[in-house]
Length: 263
Image (cartoon, rainbow, N blue to C red; front, side):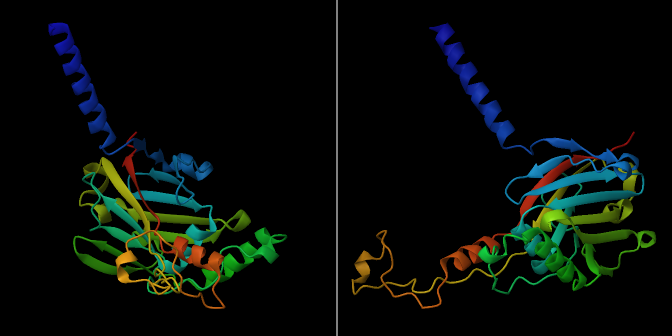
């Protein structure tokens, strides 16, 4: 009986340990030395939901963040709805320190289709040209917030910041930001070990579904049942466009735990 009791206790302990680890911060990635990154970008991870791969590096003065957005929804949300790099030096998910670039709008509806059927043949070329045109319209100013202090900043490495976005192959978007470490925390390099970096975009306003109310002449007591609304859809209702609009209403959001490179 004692053996069975010990076995049950061991199973409970193992279960609690697994549960605790699953609820933890997740893997900690090692930042790459910036000298190595200059020769070849070394991506340390990939977020499958947003189709963004990321590279984090540092030297004694700056933190460098490089991203490549590989999906059209993510590219459009970054450019048009705004983009935030949150930095928490306590390993949590505080949003009190951040770089906001580009600065977009989140109160607009997404009007276009993500993928046009009649443009597949030259999609890569046309996508790249369209993206470059949109990048040219992005204001080259950012907002940096730390310790409740807000400042408007330009891309000037001598002033503590650098940031840019460029079009890549097949309509992808490359994002680069450099932030001086002492802007993130007093003492900079010597006072920072681990960072939690949030990659978060704005999103378009969620549209309402045409004819989404009760229909078909039934009483309200049927409203809780799973049924297709009977109201007639407008003539210009486009299911693909509506799906695209819902997709664009979901923001990019993921966090990366990073240990600074101090070799």
